[in-house]
Length: 94
Image 1 (tube, rainbow, N blue to C red):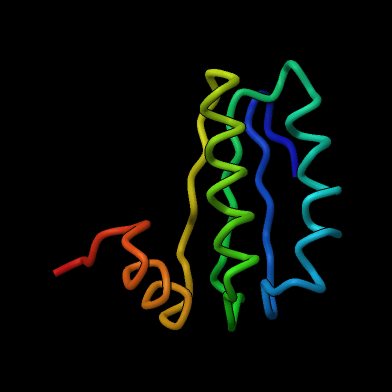
Image 2 (cartoon, rainbow, N blue to C red):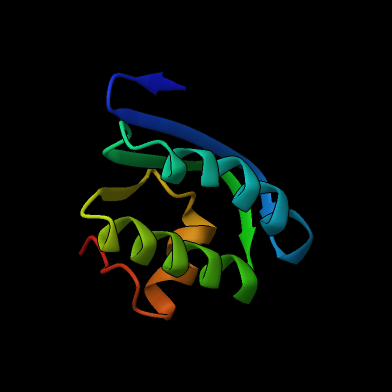
């Protein structure tokens, strides 16, 4: 979904090897659009995140940062949050 210069994307299910390529293709459109200045990826419905999913998120964040754009994760599920905390990509809410 586009809201002006902001792109909102929602992902549900397993963010694993098989699904990363398809998601990458969809989100590359936001990167290719010079009017898109920020992407928010909602992970509330994401049930699992493997190493390819982690790599994808790191790559996406790096690519947006390199283009002087903003990238944020929104509402990661508890399982995804635990995984991202474990690999120190986000900090605990404690």
